[in-house]
Length: 416
Image (cartoon, rainbow, N blue to C red; front, side, top):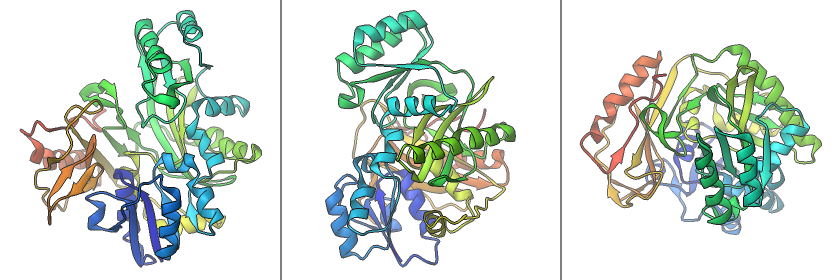
């Protein structure tokens, strides 16, 4: 079969590396792809939100399956457009992807279907939002309602920080339309974990849990990012909490979406936190998480394309998981998540039996040469029988970046 993966990040490179192992795949394409993806698939110069161009290409290249990576095309309705054109695609419709596209929708939905989450209020008026912050106190969490590339969340430890955040979103329009409405919710204390699942209607097939590191610097310091590294499984996560999350969060959410007339097919991602009252939802995404995908898919023993076909057909994919550990550390451009330079040459990336390299923000400029084009540039990962061996392998490989002040990475991924 001919398969097209839509997207250009680390998640998509990871998906493509997994699909490349499938005996069912004849030809792999990526739109638009990146420097590392170019080594595995044919990259097509079409943006992930150019829906009609993607449809035209899928017809021309006789694509049998399209798999969508990022949230922007999903919330724009790529699945609706492909299906209307008679094309086979894996992902939620625009109506279902709203669970990620609007935090206000997601919170109201959770309240209606008794899915455990933090208390909240939604505001469009800055003065009302500030009054609510003064009433509730800090710490408190401010979220842009719409998509903000993983940067629209401020965990305010003081009232002043919270007031600045709503001012930034509602008055300064830092996130444009995405921040024209804000969700303000109670701060939940506990350890976070991510639980993704293949979903079709009320059928839910959970993956193994992962944990990512959102803050830019060691010891969870600095601003929130799209994720600076991840590991799976999560050794300190009790199985009873995983079971609770599946039965009280994932399954009721899938069922509720059907009842809402927004039946969900694709990947449902739950960002969760362990509280003293059990796991609660921080956020839902309508696709695979990034960087969690990069450490979860290497542990999946199944043929990914077969899983997609089974789930879509309403069959149990019988997921099988490796007993190994996988850890991945992100290499980012200096300055990320703020301003950073593009076009910086990457050092030579030596082949390794111990590690794998996932490209996120790169372009190929020679036989084995790449330039950085994004904030998150690479993820260096390793699969080993235990967590410590995987960590040692990753951090040994990362020595190639030592002394290079154009890039940085956290040195504590997976050490908690």
